[in-house]
Image 1 (cartoon, rainbow, N blue to C red):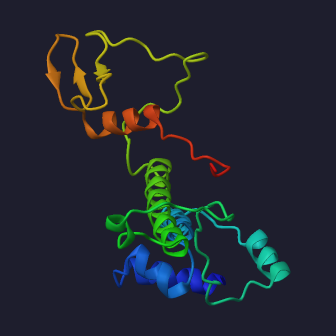
Image 2: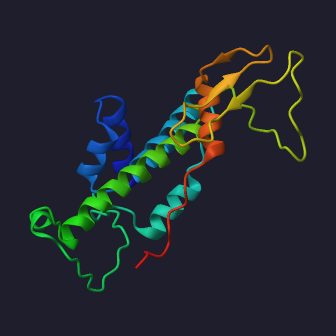
Image 3: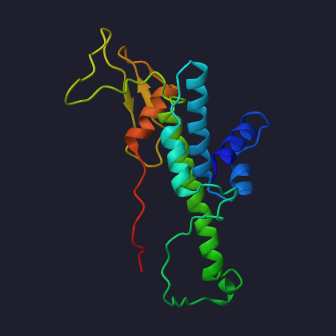
Length: 203
């Protein structure tokens, strides 16, 4: 997409209230790309407001060499990897009317997987843009610069080993239990991580 289109997207989002989903549909690109463009334009606007002198030399050169003048994307979409060989399914009479063919299931599964990818991308982008976890110490390394123990002691996050157990909670140095703060929840979610997606579909 051209730089003019990216500026147009940022203005429509900031001034006209266009959502990420609407921008993605209108410009025929994925929501992750929209969020990336908006984040970079937001950083640029912040630098300009702070009086930072911007250097457009590399950007101008890159646009010239790649002839970036497109106003719409190609309609890129996520497609879930699924086995392509025949898969025969034995159905009873009761199950016959509920059967979903492979093409329809591919569309449904791809949409569900894309929704998870968009959610994961937004969470990581918000963290990297300091919109979430603002008070977390990010320069601490357990091996090089370990965090200093507070005078009152550590606050621990406790998680149940039972998958159906209560949500994680914090235990303060005096033994009091409480719900996690927003920053603690961000830290917990990032430490827990997400289960890696299989690269090769199971047959």
